[in-house]
Image (cartoon, rainbow, N blue to C red; front, side, top):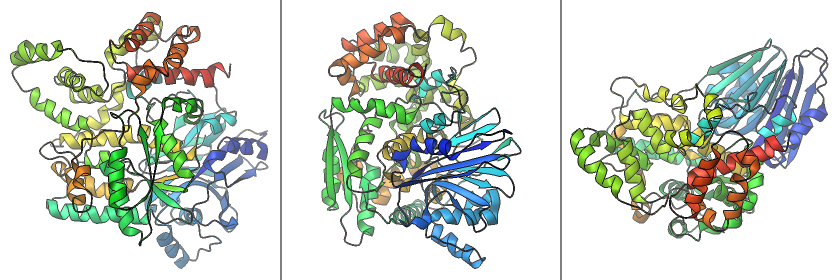
Length: 636
């Protein structure tokens, strides 16, 4: 696992040199603390520079150093990730006469590119973001893995193309302005992240998952090489589907255990991480699996008791860490690492579990992707049920049910069941994209209408966050509701939120994360199965629960989903009160021009006095302002 960067400069008098590339690399030392390298070709046209920071995982020798080239030094690569089928690919390349000087997966990609060109990515199984400079054809080839586990940012301005794994590295290229893409702010406040391919900066884009980019003769050509199809179904019986999916999941875990450095697993106590740990234990040949968990003093957010059940069941070498309110001391580092506004507060415990884990291992498996693959979110059940509720007589709903539900008071708590019931009622009559949006929104449309200043509203005349969802709900005839929801989450929430969080948290601590549930062969198979295999009779993860019922304790399988939350709401009223008010009520924030000053003051007051719960909204606004402080105000 590493950090990559580079520049292609079409200027006739380029000043590209090793110092600039090394400066970009220096901003990513945390991604690869073991060694770094640069390749610069500034006497040719265009001028080329590639940079790399390496975290040694496979082939610890110097022969695997990057940037790496082919035999005649005409093709150079910088690579971030792991290719799990590289040995199999290498055998085929050796048969075709290719020569290798290392035992690394990086070198396999170079030779595969020589054979397959742009299509080489279709044979790779793993997580990756890489750049290949082909001096024979004077072209740069960028690629990102199918699900988006590894990041890749780029900017193309004034004849200079720059790319990097992180924003700080790209900023160090000097090839981008700090001009804000204002239309992404409603997207951010809706989803809690800025969806790819856009970023908070006008000059920076993100290469989408499952896409490649070819830069040649100053022209950028982006192409999609992989896409899931939820409409084509495999009609095999349920038990056979469970057997095949179980075998594939076990194999996905097995190939991710290959490492030349110590390896362990994150363990939350949920079904997904428990499944991974259970399979690891069965594949570890008597060696104890190292597991790591995070908890809170607030019992509504603490899962340690469930993690202990799994640790004891599989006799793991288990360690725990309790996150306390002073954990926000790492916010400045997180703001810098993310590089743009990001409001998933679970980035805090994820960072700390990665930090603790790195003290003992260099690679950690996790359960990312299990919910999107097997239908694990509560909103699937709610949206499915709302279809039936919307068919009840309008008079019954409007005259009796809804007035009664809306009239019941409830205490402000983010996990309060009455809050969820009211959200369900208010969204039941909406179109499917709007219903989904109501469940995933941090700040809904009504909230944003009250939040923005009139001047800012005028500048957002064409902004519509719902546009991002429409492609996933413009389905073909007969497509199942659950499949549409899974498709939407797999293409939006998973790559833009969950995988960004895991990459940043682990790489900030020089730790590699591996996700067996995101093996593309497993995903393609499960997507091809009937929708009711995944959620049946309102039972979420029906297929997965049947796969694991013989080796995961029933207490874990039947427990309610908790999610990886943080008690930020109560922290705001106590330990973090000064941070909240000192940031959001500061003159600098209130004068920024985006928001209605009186409304900001009102929601802060309502939350602190426990008259309402604005936890998620306040956290999103706080992270937006902290980003401004770090990247815009400080720069100015």
